[in-house]
Image (cartoon, rainbow, N blue to C red; front, side):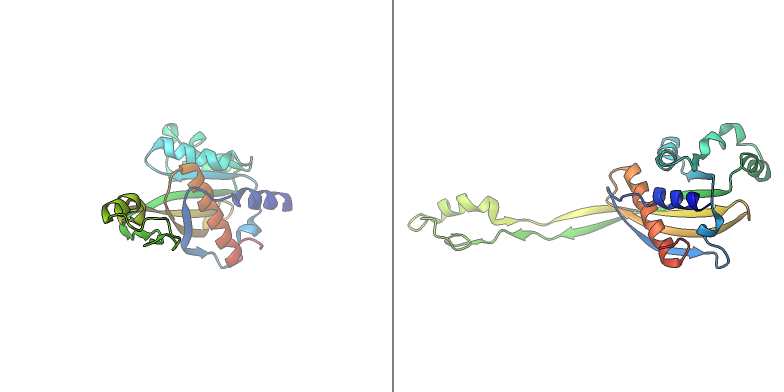
Length: 212
């Protein structure tokens, strides 16, 4: 059991890159922790409309270790018409004891002004070093330095993604941990999944769900 716990922690603590991700809020069951569950087989479920994004997200986690299994192998078009009880029985028959779900809660766009920057040049040349420009007209001086004299400001639109991550115990059939993360400057879905899981693990270590 201890070996499976170590595997779970090592897989979840993935390196973060490609986005700035932080925990917005979280909750844990006061009566049970993730560590106490000793998960051996965990289903990964990405609740997104786009099937390609679902597979990228689930594959990203499942490829890390055999403890994780993608949900599209078990819950797909063939099981769409089944009841919740029938779907749960499929997972129980496959000996799943845990489920991790990820769901995009919202997408927000913000426009911020990025101020311009001054290069540090002034009369006399770079940082006060005389460059022999005395005696030349303003046109020559300005024509030489103006392209680098000042970098104007601009407006930048930033998109942030709020993602809810849940951890369920199938043995107890209940939610034992949930957290919402905010990701900005997203350039790669797979790397963002890594960043979300790293933030989730960090929060679970803080609240005692996982050992520090």
